[in-house]
Every structure is written in structure tokens, then in C-alpha cells.
Image 1 (cartoon, helix red, strand yellow):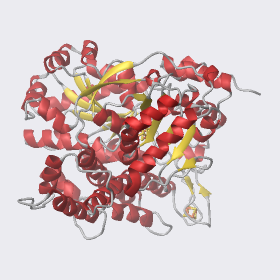
Image 2 (tube, helix red, strand yellow):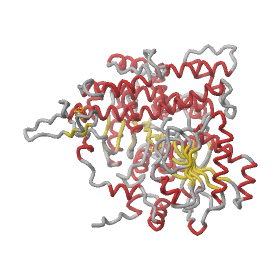
Image 3 (cartoon, helix red, strand yellow):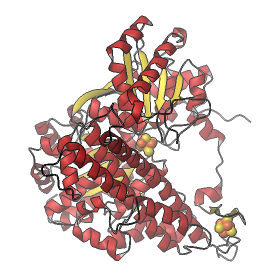
Length: 629
Ligand code: SF4
Ligand code: MSK
């Protein structure tokens, strides 16, 4: 029997998404929501985390026996061990993704130093010197490229096995570092922790759930204070600091009379070059010769966030909007690097004239046009990509074009440095606002979309609930577009905030939700928390702060959540990871971690209840710090 389709209004809160879901159905394009329904009912064992495929005696599935005891897999692993091992590998996957992205930035920095990446340069020498000095480089009297070479070596070394503690860990308050040393979760090497997680979860190794979970925390810390932080800091050095600027979001940023190129993925190494090529007068001439007014670059997901923050490039959409962007029929090319790119985009693109272009050899898609991106010839390859898009424009069928006419203003580009500059060079005004209660707390809403929820309902709902309570919101990753479309990323959004936060936003002319970058850039959030804790002379876990990922979906989101918790920042998530088959593991996640790290996970699918719980803890933390409410 055919299942009844949900209405577009039930699937997404946004008019542009609803319009394109309707068009997708008319055009016969399958979307993520269609496949979500096809996958129902899900496998209960997998949902609970009780399936193991770690060896070929299995796979095994375990469940509670009639006598109330947990069955064991063929090797004898019980449910707690199986759940913990699966969770550990999930965290390792997310940490590997972020960290390998970070490594790509080191390789680019090294190539710049060696003259092998002539189309790139170091745009922010000031940050290069500052970060290098922080990591122990003596920069006095040295040339920029020599310093960059030393910095690249230090960052590469953080991926290895020779260190006892990662370089950026010096940013963490000493009291927290002591906790990490005591529980043996101090990250030593980024790749090392990931590899050790794979080793521990091989049959016959770590068969103690608590031990495996602690190493999961260590692996995630290697991501947050290692791979991700390197990715963020080196991106700032090479491509420049995000600075507050204005832009637009929603599918309305796609222009009917332009060659539209959407960049998607995470790494700015490709998208920055595509942007530069699109600005080249010769390419614009070619586009005009093809009948277009010009070339329009739009962002999707986190590569979009990278360009939005640094270059003010508009965002077409977040995770669940990526297929829908193609459905406008006005996208000449989607250019992707890696992560969060739905394989279905190849099929969606094939329904129109859209060229789907992959650039990373580690992220190939069957059916795509692949251009193996090489930083030695980046500009030429970027021009080749733009050229493909221009040719594609000539194939566009205008009868199939329908672009939602909404686009919403946003203010973007709030790095820690930009925030400090805005505050007059010191955190003091922010601390005073927190102490005085105008800003009662800070919550970073992070990450993704998931068809388990009405698209963006939780992301936006939570953000609005928090700002009403005078809680400053930071957004990263795909929440950015959601917050932007809801009007929360402009100073006028402060009208939706409580009186205290509104006053601060008005006096600084900032929005009540600040765009802090891509999902890798959650490293900025933990760094900011460390700076605030240091300034107050307390541990991070003493602060009135939270992380939240109401609509998370990815392995990376869990790695982020866990490194926040292990850093002392509690994290709300809208759905649990696949751990609920083990009471032991679930209890540790939602309360046991509190005893070790002073923070744990809150699983709450209702944003109003989540906001209330988060608010309560913020009040408690404020009281403990002796701050007024
Ligand atoms: Fe089954 Fe153990 Fe092999 Fe997992 S490791 S598949 S539980 S026998
Ligand atoms: S892209 S990890 S859906 S934020 Fe970073 Fe968006 Fe989440 Fe991917």
C-alpha cells in the first residue's frame, strides 16, 4: 500500500523549501524525505546500537533475554561493549573527517611555503605570527614564509605519535588539563587517538564500555583542540579572518539571469579559487557572451559558511536544502569538495542541466564530473570549472526554472578576533554584560538538519527561546542558514530578544545570534569559552554556557558534542546517538560524564523543554559564580 505523502509544510518550516519540495514532486525528483519514508521501519537493533559487524564470526545482534540478562555476541561481547565500540567508531569517524580537513590546510600551507601553490598566499600575516608564537615558534626577525614553514611542521607533528599533549591544549585552563591528565584523556596525537580507537574496538581488545567511552572523549578532544582547531586557524591565516559583513540567505539568492554556481562541502581550498575565477573579468565576459548577466556564486552547508564569513558570499541553503537548490532548475554547476554531500545530488542534477563537479580524490561520486583538484594548478582548474558552468548555462531550460523569491539579510563573520575588536580589544565588556545579567549565558547552536524533524523547526525554535531569555546564541554550520532565514542574524533580530540582550545588541549593533563559521569552526567556540574561563579565573565547566545540536545527523556532530562535553560544556541534542541499547552507556552520556568532566549530554527533542532545562543550569552556574540573575 502506498504511504500518504507528508505535505511540504509538514516537512520544512520554510516557504522556499516547501515550494521546491512541491516542484521536486512535479519534476519527479526524489528527495531525502522520500527516502526517509522508504527506510521505515528502521532496524531496532541498529537504532539501539546493538548490532556488531566488527568481525566475520558475526555479524551479531544482541538483545535482552527473557531472564533480563543481555545476550552476548558470538565472541562473548555484551550489549554494553557492543554499544560503546560502535559509539567509539562513530566518534572516530567524525574526528577523522574534521581532522583530515585540517591536514589539507597544513598541506596547503606547506605548498605555499615551498612555492608549489602559486595561486594561494598568506592573507593574514598577523595571525600567522600570533598563532606561531603561541605554538612556540620564535618569530623574531624571521620572514613570513619561514615562520609558516615552522608552523606547518608543528601542526603536522600534532597528527603523529611523538607528543604527550597537543599544541593548542595550552589554550585550555590548567585545571581542565589536570582533569584530562587524571582520567588519561589528554589528546596526544590526532591520528593516534583515531587509530587507537579503531584498534581498541577490534575484536578482543577494549572490552570495557567505560574504558572505550573515555577513549572516545580523548579522540574527540584530538578533533576539537587539534584537527578542527588547526583547520580553523590555518584557514584564517591563508584566507583571512572572518570579519562582520552583510550578505543574504535562502534559495532566493540564486539569480535567474546569471550563471549560478553553488559550492558545497567544507574546505575553502577549492571554493575560494572558484570564487576568484568567477570574479575574473574574462570569465564574466564569457558568461555574458553566453547570454547571462554575470556569474553568481552561492554557498551550501559549510563550504558556504567559509565563504559567507570571509567573503560575504550568500548562502543558498543548509543540509536539507541541497537537493532543493538543484530543483530550482537554475543551477549550472554544483562544485563539491567533501563531507555532508548527499550522493543523491548526482541523480538530482541529472534531472536538470546541472553539472555536478567533484574535486577531491577522497570524495568521488559515481556519475559526477571529476576534476582532481591540485593546489599547484588551482586557478586554472577553477577557471575550467567556471567554464563548464558557463557552457551549462546555454543548456538551461527556462521553462523549468522556478526560483523562490525570498532572500533574507544577514550579518556574518564573527570570529573571536572580530568579536574582540568589536568589544574594543578586550573581553571585558562581554564579561561585564554576563556578570550584570544582560547576557545571562551563551549557547552555541551547532550543526545539521535531520529529516527526523520538521526541517529547521528545532534549530530556529531553540534559538528564539534562548534569546528571549537573554542568552546570547552563537551559530555554526547549517544552523547559520536557519537562524539567518528566521531574521536572527541581523541587529534588528534583537527585537525578538529579552530586554538585557536587546540592549547589548543595540549598543553594539550586533545580532542576537552571531555567525561563528562552519562546523570545523566550533573550535572557535571552545577557544572562546577557554578565554572567558581564564578571564574569570574558573574552569570552563563553571561557565553559564551550553552547546546544542537539535537536528544533528553526522558523525562529526557527535565528535563536536563530545569534545564540548569533555571540555566542560554541556550539550543538548535532539535525538540520541545509537547508544540506547545499553543502559550503562546511556547513563554515562546523560549523567556519568558530569562526574568526570562537569558536563554531560541532555537528550531533549522538544526545543521548549530543552530551553527550560538549559536555562535552569545557566541559573545554577550563575549563582555558583556569585552572579545576579
Ligand atoms: Fe559478533 Fe563479537 Fe564479531 Fe562483533 S566482534 S561480530 S559481537 S563475534
Ligand atoms: S555541513 S556536519 S550538515 S552542520 Fe558542516 Fe551542515 Fe552538519 Fe554537515
